[in-house]
Image (tube, rainbow, N blue to C red; front, top):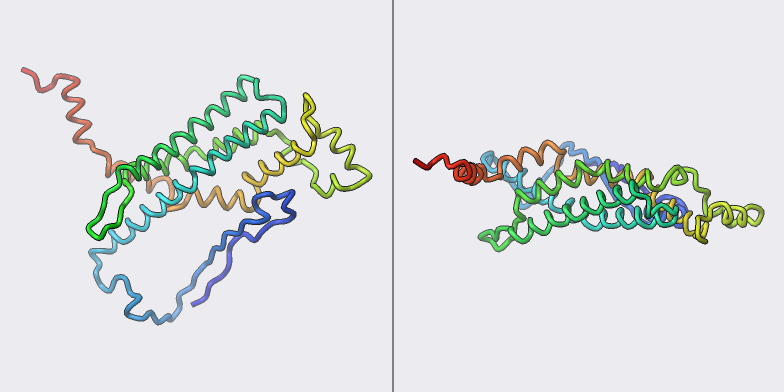
Amino acid sequence: MKIISVGTPPQGDLRDWPIAAERYNPQGFVIFEDVFVPNDRVFLDGETQMAGAFAHSLGLWLRASSLAQACENVDALVGLAQLMAEANGLDKVPHVREKITDMAMHATLVRATYEASLATGQVQPNGAVLPNELYANAGKYLMAEQRALMMRHLLDIAGGSALTVPSNADFDNPEIGDLLRKYMAGKDGIDGMLRSKLFHAVRDATVSAFGGYENISLLQGGGGLHAQRVVTRSRYDFDKARRLARKLARLDEQ
């Protein structure tokens, strides 16, 4: 067996990369070539009828864990957007407020579906609790499908300085440090270094090697978007929906 490391190593100065500099996500491309697996480590041995259930269970847990991971992540993105808007003096601008409201609505619905998947989970005969598949899959889809829009809102609020912000080493340079603090400052006495830190955090959370890794991970964890649509449709109670519709339309009345 060979494992090729394909993870994203820690990146740069902690002051410039507040997230990526200390977070490492190990990933491996694993090659099984003429590998002996002891019998006590074999999960399935010819039980082809269980293959679907095995894969399905893995998908459920991966989607539920991605949804759990996203809850705090999307709240942090909302916080970054709000802090960035305040630092840029834009927090009272209507279209900026609307973008942050979109992000807050998204974060609230992501957490609501995650908590619903746990609150309505099923206890299995072995004592394990499985998250509710309908809510876990619908929530995972909602989170992943809207993620690019949340990134766009955050970057739009931050502006181009998220890309062109000088490094902290530049601020330390005695020849230009004071000038950077002066011209990076915002309105109403907003400190230039504070704005710089926010720009670095926004860039790190969205377009750094770590930010890119996290975006792909949250999108593809447990399978792509179509997989969640398939499971959501298969678990949705269409019979109940039909009964309610028939009652609403009085189809069964004489």
